[in-house]
Every structure is written in C-alpha cells, then in structure tokens.
Image 1 (cartoon, helix red, strand yellow):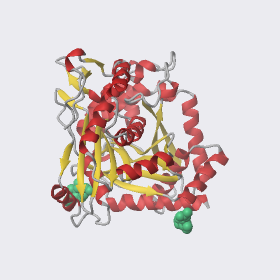
Image 2 (cartoon, helix red, strand yellow):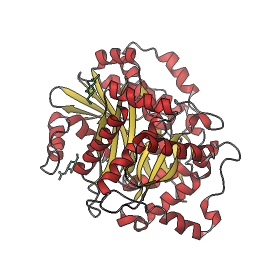
Image 3 (cartoon, protein in one colour):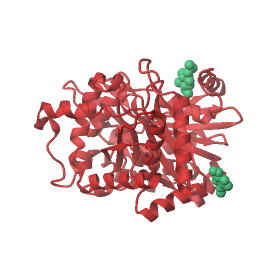
Length: 476
Ligand SMILES: *[C@@H]1O[C@H](CO)[C@@H](O)[C@H](O)[C@H]1NC(C)=O
Ligand SMILES: *[C@@H]1O[C@H](CO)[C@@H](O)[C@H](O)[C@H]1NC(C)=O
C-alpha cells in the first residue's frame, strides 16, 4: 500500500457532469453485458504491486474520468461525479483461486488448448460490476492474477462509457511506462501536471462536440413509422444461432498473422487505396457466407458496423490522451451472392463505408442509432430469435498500431511484458463478432469477441480460421 501520499482530498470539491446520449446508452447496455472493457497484460516477472498501485493512481489523477463514478439521481438522470482522490485498489487473486477459475473454464465442453492468459481475459469480460444499475457505480477495477509457471496477468476492467478503444490503447501505453518509471519519481512536477488536467471530465460528451450543422434531428422527431421500419432493418442475415436461450457470456477467438502475411495484406490495401477494415469485413463476410450457403443462390444481406474514432474531427478536436468514449458508428449492409473475390469485395465495402462517412452519417445518424440500440435493449424480441444481434460484425475504421520497439524492449526487460490483449464484451446487445485489431510490430493481432452460447467456440474458431485462410490466400 503506498496510497498514503496522495493529494489532500479536502482541497478539491467533487466535480462532474451529466452523461451525454452515447454515454447514457452504454450505461443502459452494460447491465445486459455489453460494454465491459478489459485490458490484460501478461507478465513473466512478479509485478511490484505498490508500484502498480501508484501508477494506477497517477493515471486516475491525470485522467479524472478514471476517478469518476456513475451516479443515478432521483430524476433518473445519470452523471459522472469525479472523486477528488484516486481510489482504485488492486485486488490480488492467488494461484489457487486462479486455478479454480481455469479448471472451471476447462470443463469438457470447452477447448483445453486455450492459454491461461486468454481464459483470464474471458473471465474478466464476464465480471459485470454494473448488472444491477445501482445508484453509484465505480468505473475502473484492477486485478492481478497469479498464473501457473510463474507468470502473472494484470487486468484493468473499465466501463466503456469512460473507455473507448483509443482510451484503452493510450492506457496500455501509459501504464507500463508509469510502472517502469520506478520509485525515483518526483512528486512536485507530477502534481502540477495532474492539477492542470483536473478539468478533463468536465468537458463534454461526443454529442456536444459535433461540428455545427452536422447532426440532425433525432429519430423520434420523425415519427413512429420510421422506428418500426428501422428496427425491422435490424433483422438481416445472421450467423447460425447455436443456443439462443441460455444466459450469455462473452468469449474470444484470436486471429494472428505473422509479419510477412500482415505485410502482404497491408500492401494490398495500400495499392487499392483502402483501409484494413475493408478487407477484414470482406474476409468475414466470405467466411460467414460460406458457412451459410446451401443449394440456394439467393443473395444475403449482412449488417456491418464500423466504429470511427471521432476525436480529430470534433469541434474542438481532442487528442488520443483525452479519455472517454468518442467513437461513432456507421451501419452498412452488404449483399453477398456467393463466389465473391476478396479484394473486389473489400473495395466495394470500403467505398460504401467511405461514402457514408463523406456524407457525415457518423454524426447525422448518431442519435438514431443510439435510440434504436436503446429500443432493442428494452425489447430483445425485436431482434431475430431475441438474439439482441444488431449486426453480423463490428470493426474499427483504423487498427491500433503498437510499434514502439525501443520502449517495448525496455518494458519487456523491466516488467517481463510478454503479451497484451484488449477488447470489450458484447453478450448483451451487439454484433455476432466484434473485431479489435492491433498491428503490433508489424503483425496483425485481432481479438474477436462473440456471445456464447448463442455462438459456440467451435463455430467461431472455424469462422475465424476461414477468415484467416481467405486473408492469407488473398495476400498471395
Ligand atoms: C467454458 O469457459 C468459459 C470461460 O472461458 C466459462 O465462462 C464457462 O462457464 C465454461 N463452461 C462450462 C460449462 O464450464
Ligand atoms: C508466416 O507464416 C507462413 C504460413 O502461413 C509461413 O509460410 C511463413 O514462413 C511465415 N513467415 C514468417 C516471417 O514467419
């Protein structure tokens, strides 16, 4: 415990602000199990717990949204209220408790060739601290698991309204840096910096930062007919549902490619002027369609959500160190007839997305999509088999690029950092497969999250294996 040397808590009044529309939607989605963000670091050296505790408190001071709680008032309005002092306390899970968790995950119906690291990540994705929508909810939890073979996993779990993927990527960069900074840190300069950032949480939600004239009236202003039309447009082609009835949890399949495979895919994108998301979606649709296609040759329509980090196009623009949720989605539908070629399809998909973005759909449709998501949360029966699936797949417009070989080497030495994974749960409302892609030192690493047992591990492993084969084949 080294939390005794904090700022005097009496000096700053708690501050806060009401949540915005998108943040409110996450508040609604998380009780059902969608929007639990998890960042996991695999370490081969015993972590210095007090150093980690310090680093987390520094992060909280530096980014006040991380030391905020979600508070629901009598009027049912929800606000972020910032605590003056950082409060996250690391929980330690002993080797024997971790073993119990791993044994449970290894029951016969589960595959046993999944690494303990991967299983700990899945376990955390299903720790829902928010299922009851209590009046006050913390948004940030930290846990260290001792693994067999003298390894450790450090896990940060956050509410997505405070942590989109850009925030997660910045956290994953800042935390190991703060940890390896060591004990010799100077308090004075840090404090100044922290105080200078105190106002961050007071800044606005994404809706209030949309450039003038780019949003339009929300759906409810345009009548109920529009609503039933839009909700029925959610029932597009789905992957086969294996078990739509049992309670759901999130599971993960990983898609990894080596440097030369990744290089060929990226070169293919570059030469065609498209982004990686286009070819990932194309491979996903080809893989999904090959599993569905029988004798009929009818076209099938699939829904794909592409998430855009809006920070740089907001007014005023925000940097990637501005923590919170500043993504918006574009929902496109794609008709697949069978026999599509990877790159032709990728180009078509990317052009459809780019056209939607050019016409500002990520701003103009934001309120509509939030409203529909809320309606579907309230009425799962509006979705096929009450599956709560709103699209086949979700991707990000841009991958996280993690290319700090120099700092990596240093962190690898000092912390024994061997691997990391980050993603968010989707078993409430969401796609059948959510892709969280990172290019780490030139290698593509996708964490693919899906709801189980709505979809089975076998089914999703097969889907992702096919996607990879399609991508490797297309790269050659
Ligand atoms: C299978 O593993 C997951 C975690 O990977 C766990 O949540 C689930 O309970 C396991 N299934 C059984 C039947 O133990
Ligand atoms: C990448 O993987 C392929 C198999 O898909 C293999 O043939 C190739 O040698 C590997 N390249 C590198 C650089 O590891």
